[in-house]
Length: 179
Image (cartoon, rainbow, N blue to C red; front, side, top):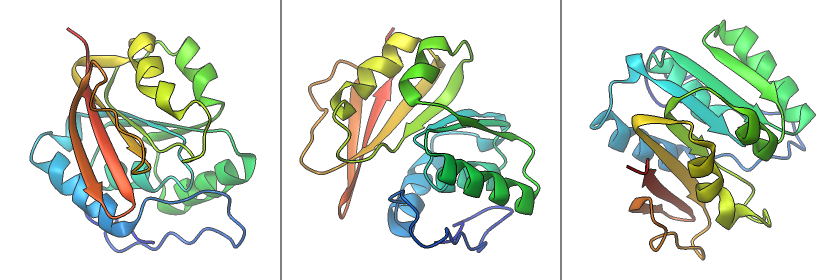
């Protein structure tokens, strides 16, 4: 796994063996960031990365100059690895939080331009994540939420949904903030 573009382009991200996360594939990450590069100015962004796993999405945003990044991960081994990578790359604009995503969403008062979530595909409450993010009211006025999910789940009927992209086994659904 590697960082696709920006200041840290080519940097390898090698989690230890037995790592419990399912990282977003390089191909899917590259495709996602190609879409985003045509829609946003990375340097002004406040980003929330829920279910961070390896932290690869946060590293991509940081590599492209995102202003502020908060990542939330429940697994302590994953947080240890993420913090090691943050120190190794000297990334000071990323704050790694060891919390359950639901608990974080209940108490968060920060507004984000982009919220990205890559939950475990077998998470029992995966289908509720768009509603939880919307109810938390953490998106800025022009903000949007991106959810990575398995192909057998569709969010097209969800109120805030506006786009779906498929990259092999990786699916991204995009949601806008409610007006």
